[in-house]
Amino acid sequence: MNDSGYGLLDGKTGIIFGALNEDSIAWSIAEAVHREGGQFVLSNAPVARRLGNLDTLAERTDSSIIWADATSDDDLHDLYEQVAEEHGSVDFVVHSIGMGVNVRKDVPYQDLNYNWYQKTLDISAVSLHRIVHHGLESGALADGGSILALSYIGAQRIFSKYSEMGDAKALLESIVRSFGYRLGQRDIRINAISQSPTRTTAGSGIEGFDAMYEFAEKVAPLGNASAESCADYAVTLLSDLTRMVTMQTLYHDGGFSTMGISDALVEDLADAFKEDGE
Ligand SMILES: NC(=O)c1ccc[n+]([C@@H]2O[C@H](COP(=O)([O-])OP(=O)(O)OC[C@H]3O[C@@H](n4cnc5c(N)ncnc54)[C@H](O)[C@@H]3O)[C@@H](O)[C@H]2O)c1
Image (cartoon, rainbow, N blue to C red; front, side, top):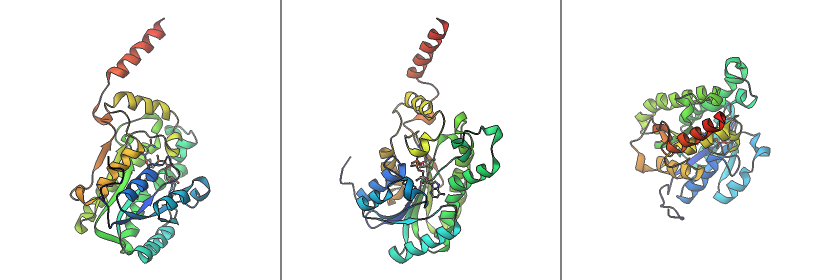
């Protein structure tokens, strides 16, 4: 790895949504994009102003912040207007936003509070649609651009404690495909990275996260992918090197998604069964 980057994003300008603190996947992506020569505006919900430390990241990467709730059409409209005024057009957008309201409040899947469920879907999936819609409507999204969202394998397979977030990620990945078709007319591409369990604020809000993390770590041949390695992968998807890749869910998970069981897990389970029998 070249610490000073490869200039993959020289001359490109974008928006990165969802950096809250140093643990955030979007934080690592912002640092990697900066290293590769890209410029960007950082955005997060107004409430993140007091919950996180986005100012530090903005200072470190020489970027500005526009606070916007990604579920608000007015906020997103204003955000693109400001971005267009200050930077002209936008070559890339990173959507790294998620929250499971029922999950946070420990409501089981069969008893979901539907208002919270709608909020979960709105924040974690529909916001991607809104962000792309307003990007197009404002005229800010440039031809040949790249849009990236963050997903999890819970979109495709059941991870019991992931609950409603599995539905949100399934919708997110579907929006990636549906918009991908339409954006292709302007050579704009859109993809989702399906990332390993990662220790972040959103991650740790999921009951049983540590068990999911350890399980994936034991099963994936390369182990869990870190936020930093996710950021390196993200940079390639924002660069022109991947200009023919679109509408994909791309697994960045150390090989987890192709595995069944591993020796490490078999041995652990055998030990556990032995202890149970004693
Ligand atoms: N942590 C993991 O294990 C993991 C694994 C796979 C995918 N992901 C996904 O990665 C993305 C980033 O999450 P993270 O793990 O870095 O956690 P994080 O908590 O650092 O990031 C989530 C972000 O969403 C923002 N957000 C919430 N509501 C919002 C709203 N209404 N408007 C704008 N922003 C809002 C939060 O402020 C926060 O910055 C999410 O989509 C998450 O589902 C995470």
